[in-house]
Image 1 (cartoon, helix red, strand yellow):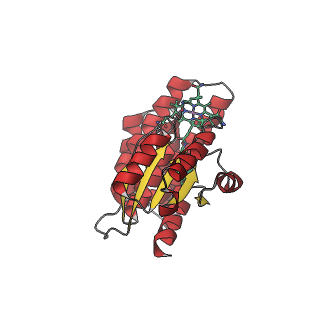
Image 2 (cartoon, rainbow, N blue to C red):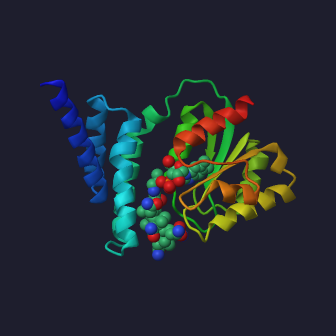
Length: 221
Ligand code: B12
């Protein structure tokens, strides 16, 4: 096989992964992801060029009301199945702990794929990660900060209607006297750096890689 043919096969495989996510075939998505790793593709490449384009297409189709929540859930499950396969690569362990992160999807919001990805990446950078899950109230964030004393708090919101819960959480941290003990990272599709600044967060990150770099920077500063 020539080098060119080999490359073509790789990109076919990524296209197949995209299609498997769109069709919500979770076992098939995981199998193809394993195959891609075996064939030498990096976890990042599989994520960026295989899985994410699939979720993007699903999001667009959902927006156009061509598909509905059950189909989106199947795709989300396929994405999660692939992320479970990629977990060891994304979170190469063995590194010493360089800091602590408390992370969650804010109150009223159950989207957790992006948050899980960020948690995995930051864990891979050597952080101890306390994942509070989704639909996390300001009180639960406050309690977790008291208990775990993290360096960083990460909040995710995917809905324009739940972005305000980030602001309420920051207010609750202030009222509990904990705000100044942590750096606050926010992210999620509708969030912007302007919004982050407006609510008093320390940084907005557009994706998991930026989140990992920002987290590293915060603990080394
Ligand atoms: C999957 C999905 C669902 C699944 C969620 C499953 C799950 N376990 O997460 C289900 C079907 C449950 C769902 C439900 C709903 N959804 Co929905 N969903 C999506 C979809 C298609 C993909 C989201 C996703 O997982 N993307 C992939 C991940 C990897 O990307 P990401 O989340 O953006 O995360 C990255 C960055 O944003 C960043 N990041 C994310 N979080 C954080 C946190 C920190 C700290 C940092 C630093 C960075 C960071 O890094 C991540 C990795 O790179 C989006 C469309 C889209 N393309 O975004 C709609 C979307 C978010 N959903 C939408 C809607 C309207 C809903 C519902 C209200 C639908 C309904 N009528 O019931 C419900 C809401 C339920 C609720 N209360 O939360 C709208 C939101 C519109 C809006 N602006 O408010 C969207 C945009 C679809 C659309 N175009 O209309 N949804």
